[in-house]
Image: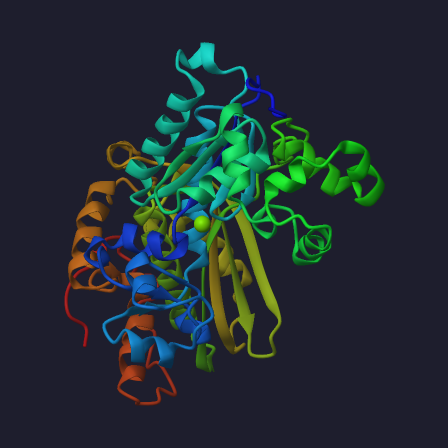
Length: 428
Ligand SMILES: [Mg+2]
């Protein structure tokens, strides 16, 4: 028996199943059980639920082919901002159990559980299952989880149980697991190395792991030598903690044609972007600490500003009140503008209850109002209820969808009349 039976190392690998599609289903429960495919924007299937996979949909398939083999497929545009938010929530849930978490990819991470049994008063297996249960409950999707004495074995474990499985590989299991693992399926062994090893008669990971170290040193480079150790249950690849948290953000940008020099209209476009960004933030239970916005002129020159908000918020009127003075400073009258954009960042998680307790900077708009608005928006569409400051943009969009070119927004009836409460009612 060449492999150590016991190891003080316990590495976890977590992998979201059909992650992008699962995020969409988690946000919209009416999609559950349906074949959901993302990638509409590129006309190619990027990710798909297992229901779609069972119908034969594969990654990279042209959407016309998808529609042919799976006519009831729900095909959505990718929303990477949303996937990144889910990804950060995944990492943060795993970090409740250990600070040593490596953000390997948008839907995968490694975590080092070594030395944490006493703290959690549980065996590694139970910690791994607790992580998995929290992830699935809070994110509304399934995860494949592997546990082993090294990263390579943990990764092999999560792969074995896909989807929704859990595989713990202890020292006594290594031989059996590696014996049925194709050499080309080992994490870190690319097609060239696999072909090289096959040329020496190695077909399985076990045959590679059983090779003596002198041969490995002589014939292979350091990365493969490390894999050899990892497969044998000796951890040599550390779980790498990120040096800095990447900034998470939600941005909304829109270009309008023809460009407009109308101050009210340009501001209403910005206001509308703020509302859309806030809608998304609230949907994920996030409140932003920072807001930045830009105005783009017809000649493509941009001006913009970033500011810290008094309190973390996802209430549009708070943000609009904060950016209005900056807008007034940056907007140059008589200049045609073609686009505006807003970005929220520096998020804090706000649970539903906490959101109700947040003191809004504009106390006449309690967060509760937005809870109601979000319910209405889910029922009647995102633009059912909106701020008066977004009115001009809404009217303009409404006309545009009817194919009426709007050359001028007549008058400026809304300047100075932003009443700070949601506009409710039909405009068109
Ligand atoms: Mg995955």
